[in-house]
Length: 291
Ligand SMILES: [Zn+2]
Image: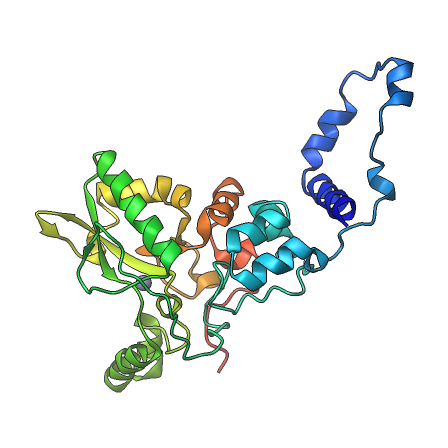
């Protein structure tokens, strides 16, 4: 069983890294004959292919344990995981489950269950928290580390203007907007309940702080905002709603809204030059609600 798993892992690495193959084929080919006959060379092409990573025991075990970094590592890392999802070959991975860092919430994809309330929210340490709201543990710890790094870089402090928001509070907020502006007006400024990343415990709105804290609109022109654009991915966060991507995300640019996807996927997102989570995972654009 161990041999099979190793062979499968090799197959994954080989199919997800064509550049390595090209380098290998152009390498010097001279090898002493006795070495060729004496070394046990694994024959990758003859090994059972890991068409479905969901058959890998270490992957399914990590999924069941809620250990997202281990699950991503089991399929070969962030880029391999992304590519497998985009290719539709991760049959056991749903992108609607808010229990995982790869959940995608947009105007086509409500949370499942729609009124989910993460049971493990914690308030991040050492970050000004204007609303005392929590995040899921990995996101909270990472936000603390990131706030320390922003400070160490001389870019100032960041504070939290909003983190977890419940279905009920989103219902109240959205309902207020709808009463004032109608559905179209409310949809332009507020997510419908069950459709907000904030409800997953993986989304946060940050503000620059110094002598007191600024507003969301201050992020774009601040040293903190500039630092986040460059470095947030190193801590597992992405700027979720970028300029020029409203037709995909359904939201106007929000330089203050960060989404935690974990360092493994965030590295793949950054290195691949992606700008929306929808395109990253090969999903349809979600500019509007379907009804
Ligand atoms: Zn937000």
